[in-house]
Image (cartoon, rainbow over all chains, first blue to last red; front, side):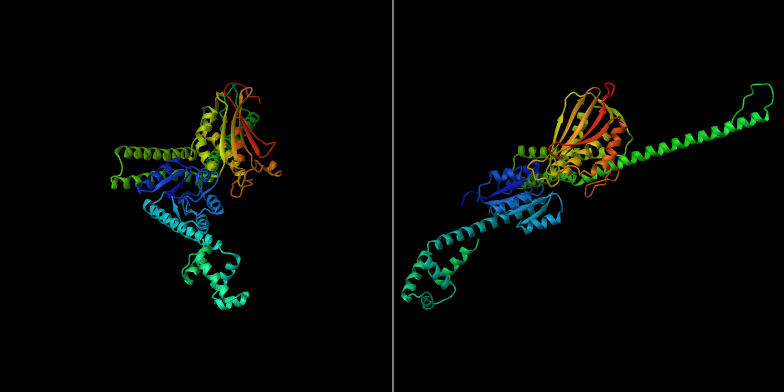
Length: 204
Length: 289
C-alpha cells in the first residue's frame, strides 16, 4: 500500500477549468494533481495511490464514464465525483449506479463540491483501511494447512469439537490441537475474534 | 398598363384597320409588361425565399451544434466561477498574495472574453442578413469558423485537422454562406464518424489551388461511408441518413456553391469514408476546372 498523501485528481480537458479547480482544492488545503485527459491520468496514476477523482464526464478520447469503467476493471477503488456541463439524467444515473459518489453540474457551487470531495477522501481512507485489514486476514488464513482450513470451516459453522472429531474421524484431542494452532496462526484470542477474521477476509 | 400614345406620322386621320392594329399591338404589349412584372415579382419572392431558407438551414446547422456550443460557453463560466470562489475563500483566510489575486483576476477576465468571443461568432452565423460578396481568403474564412467546428468535433471525440495551402488567390464570395457550406460538410464528417472505434478519428479540411483560376476545398472523413443508395438522392432536399437531420444541408450547400460559380461533389475514399469537395473561382482569372 502506498503511503502517499491523499490527492484530489482533477481530470478535465479545459486548462482554465483545471487551473481553477486546482486553486479551489488548494484553498481547502487539499493536495491536487490535474490531468488533461483520462489517458494522461491512467498513465500517471500509480495503482493504489489514495485520493479521489474529480472527473469531467464529456472529454475527447476516453470519456469520464469510460475511465470509471476502466478503473473498475483495474480494481482501483478511487471514489469519483463527476462534473458535467448538462443535467444529463441518464448519464448521471448510470454513473452513480456504477459507483460514482456524486454528480455536479457546471458551474459548480464550490462549498458543496469541497464537502463532497472531503467525503470522498474520507470514504477512500475507510475503504483502504478495510481492504488492508481484509488483506491481512486473508494472509493469516493462508497460513493454515488444508486440514486446519477444513476444521476452521466447521468451527465457524458452529460445530463442537466433539462433532467435528466425529465427522472427520479424528480424536477429540487432535481436533483440539488443530484448533489451538488455528487460533494461534490467525492471531485470535477467542471464538468471536476468529469468526471476525474469517468475516473480514471474505470482504473487500 | 394598356394605354398607348399614338403619334401621327401622316397628315390624315387614323383609319379603322390602323386603329385595330395598334390596339392589338397595345394589348400584346400590355400582356408582355404584365408578364415581365409577374416574373420580376416571382423572382423577388424566390430570392426572398432563398434568403430565408439559407438563414433557416444555417440556424439548423448551428442548432445541431447547440449542445457543443453550450458546453464550450459553460467551460469558461465554470472556470470564472471556480476562480472567483477559490479566490474568495483564500482572501477570507488571508491565504493569498496580492500577486495571486492579480493573476486570478487576469484569468477571470480572459475566460470572460473567451466566452464572449464564442457568442460573437455564433451571433455572426445566425444573424439575418443580406447577401454580401466580398474579397476573401478562403483560409481566413475557414480559420474564422474552425473554433466552433473544432469544439463540435472534439465533443464527438473527433479531431479536426486543417491543411490549408498558403497564399491561395482570393475568392469573391458571401463569407457567411461559404462558412455555412464548410460547417455543414464538417458536421456531416463528424456524424459519419459516430460510433467509430479508432483511437483518433479525424476530419480533414484541405484547400488547394486548381489551375488555373480556381481553388478546391475538400472535407474528408474516415467514417462509415455513404450507403450506395444514397448517391442519387444525396442532394435532394429532405434526404437524410441521420437520425435527427433535416436533410437540407447538402442540397443548400450545393446551391450556395453553384450560385458562386463553383461545383460541389463527393468521392468515396480508397480506404474508407467519404470526401466532399467544392470548387470556387478565384478573382484571378477564368475558371476552368
